[in-house]
Image (cartoon, rainbow, N blue to C red; front, side, top):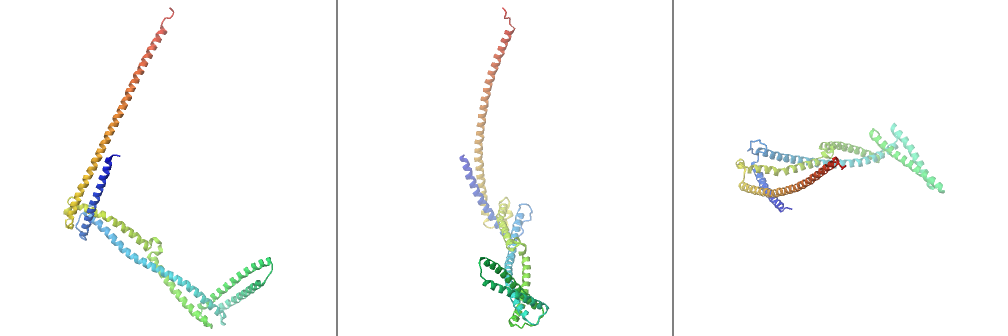
Length: 375
């Protein structure tokens, strides 16, 4: 590889380092000028890329970040509230589940006492009849199971016994479950109608407890509806994308993107300050370090220009050699073609001689044909 290409790489690396240093200086200068400008409105121009446009872009970015941070604070509160709501909803639902079990137990106890009471209305009388029928069935199934337990016999008898036992146990379980539901229904019926006070002290206490449980469940139900509506308004009811936490992530990502754009804005303003006439335009907003920064930036620009010139010169030298090499290649090609032409000319001369000899031979043959050969 041509050593000069390594030289170009070194020159380009040096140019890159100088350019980074210059850009860093101009960025710092631009940032310092913008900070000193503050809320002032020193530029009236609306020219694209001019000081006024750069300042407007800077302020737009600053406002976007400030607005986003305010929104994030609000969303963080919403997110915290949403978590509190979720925890409370979970607690309410857990409590409701426990209360339902307690209420069902109280209803069952009340129902059993209600069906034992002598003063029954039409509904409880009907339930009493159903209770008695179920108790008879349960008693029959229990007796049958006891009898089956005592039975002996061979393998066939054992198989038949197991089958009947399974059926009887299933029926017994169903009738017990139905009896439980019947007592539950009776208890609910008692609390929903104006009936005489229960004689059973424990059942009476259960009735008071059940009333308290129902009131508590009603209160929890209202609170749950209110919390779910609040959750919906906060965004929890519209999927994960609209939740406060995801919106916060989106805004934080946008803030990071805008923040990365600030150095480019600083550089643009610093470049304008370093350009011809820039000192006059930004004179009121330059700090004491600005002259030295501008001087250093100008010196770096000269060094960069020198490096660029050196790169162009080396490239030109490489190009000259490449052009010379191309000329040599073309000359060799001409020589090769000339050699081919000379060879072709020699071939043509030989062919022409062959044609001449052939024509001479034809003439001799024609004379022979026309000649007198009889003498």
